[in-house]
Image (cartoon, rainbow, N blue to C red; front, side):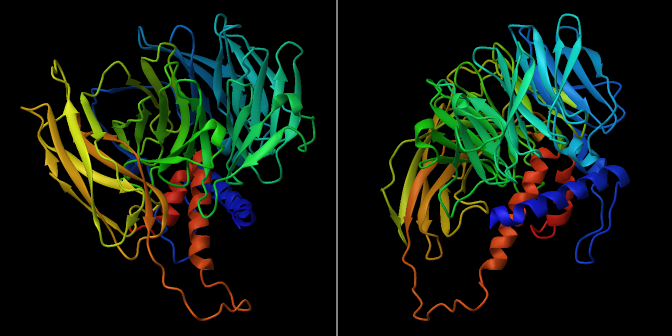
Length: 554
């Protein structure tokens, strides 16, 4: 059913987003609020953080910051696009100066597609150039970082919505996605030729990544799946060879957007679920048959955190943006998830990020505030959370299970902006709407590490009769504050299996009657597809918030 209703909702979302840009308001049925989300509501503070530093981008009259990449000198290059202009910009962190490189050409693409796609960047060390996708011109392009020369190459499919891109391991080709054209494509850098390969109607290929075996992995935002691609087996114009679609086993599903392959041996697949508040992590060989859900901190301003682009560094650490949660997050190689509040908020509208060559800075762009920023990866959060016992293989109703933990800090703290005297404990995750039928009591409820280096405690977990049976991931978390009451959270996912008896009805199902469960399923799907539109239409999140604000009680 997802695939059946996905495209109409996608089209509706694009239409609303486009209307919002042009008219700054639109009419809704009387049952939906007519209030327009304004810049003052999404960006009404700019706080100070010890971990994140931000910079205003000058001379931008309109919003439109999208993708970002760093060159070999650590300079971030990023992309700004409106319905009439496209521009590449470079920031020099040594002297805080910006350089601007306009991309010439008249707009040839529908405005709704411009708002939806384009703006991805990747650095090419071999040629000292930055490659980019430009949905406005329906083109793949490159800029020489030494002399600023820009070259463009037209995509054969009109209004393709050219989106993500990645450089091949040998550096001789660029692979890209067409979110509207429903193609992936390859560009031979030497011969300057483009080939396209269809992924299927209404699949929406979005972002992509290479593994060490030369296979491509592609997120398919509109078909709730990912695609494993063997480039050597592809046939131009055909989808019968070299493509394998992979989905989560029902009843679980995801709205994939960002994707990365990392870990010590590049053996794990990281996929952002932009329909909820989690990152899905699986062994590459498992192909999503077994996976862990990294549930993020609950979003305060918006109903879900909406993880978006995912990137990795040379050390196997993974980073992603929480679009709705207004956070930048890191999963270290040991599995620890750390989340940092972005100082501009409550919604800077951050979707894209990039790692510097030495992994010291994680750069990102802010669409709503026309700013760029970076997470200082050289600053270590001096806190750790460890789970010290193993829960039973299966948890049953009305029993209390202690999940033992240890929270510690570094023995010597020379300079930290973090508060250590009121570290909060919480447990979340399990489903899109949080814990269901599972309750917990932390003991202690708060921790003071000012005068000690380690404190042990438990989460006492109880399973209720209304808990759904199945395999789930719960997330023990500690949270503290830094400057200006910005939060830093640390968590470790834990897998649990719930065994809850269900009452079986003796009344046979009437197959001639409408499915009574159809309404909640459709509402769930609408939420997912609304957030998919958000993922690739930066403006559309404001529309999403407006439409679903009442539903989530905000």
